[in-house]
Image 1 (cartoon, rainbow, N blue to C red):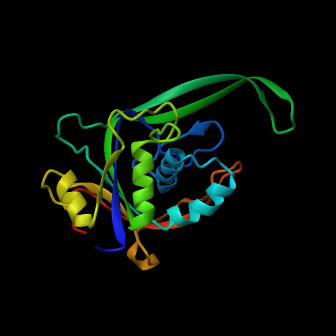
Image 2 (cartoon, one colour; image 1 turned 180 degrees about the vertical axis):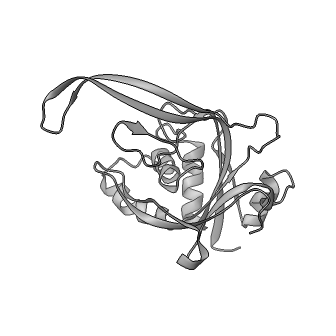
Amino acid sequence: MSDHAHLALRLEGPLQSWGYESQFNRRQTGPLPTKSALLGLCAAAMGLAKGSADEAAMLPRLAELRCLVLALNRPGAAGFATARLEDYHTVQNTRTADGKIKATHLTRRDYLTDARFLGLLSGERLLAQRVSAALQDPVWGVWLGRKACIPSAPVFAGLFDSEADALAALLGGEPIDAFTRQREVAAFAEGTDSLPDQPLSFAIPRAFAPRRVRRREAGQAE
């Protein structure tokens, strides 16, 4: 048995929001789950308090897991989600930069509706087993990007010896090329984009490092 394993995450729910360029009054969502959100979900299941010594010790190990995400909704398929929902917030009694109280503060937050994703976190077997156990009996609640985004199905989808085994079990026999996907890569030249979603700390202010990924649309070969 290899010392590596592949943890599969089922990411399904009526609302999802994967923080992307979320600054100030406008909180947007990316089209695919971010690694920072997935590791945050795992950290919550493991009971790692933000900014704690336990988080500081565990987060670098979690960050070493390679991330692959696939969008399971596709054009023409039943339930294909194209809609985004904008939630308009009016918040009272917030503080301005100079410390004064602001009577009303307006924000807009975007969500994906009825989306379905598959996430694979691949790496050290013992770590993957520990996270798997936590997801099946979480210390704290888990959500799909924001606390309002509750999963509609169990997040833990299995622990597999290989990526091929995971995809064969979870994609209904369809090839990976049939799905839009985003894969974390080791070398810059292998990627097509860099994302600032490798978490360094979830304490306030949160800290992230860049991560290199390769995205392929449905129908494109690896």
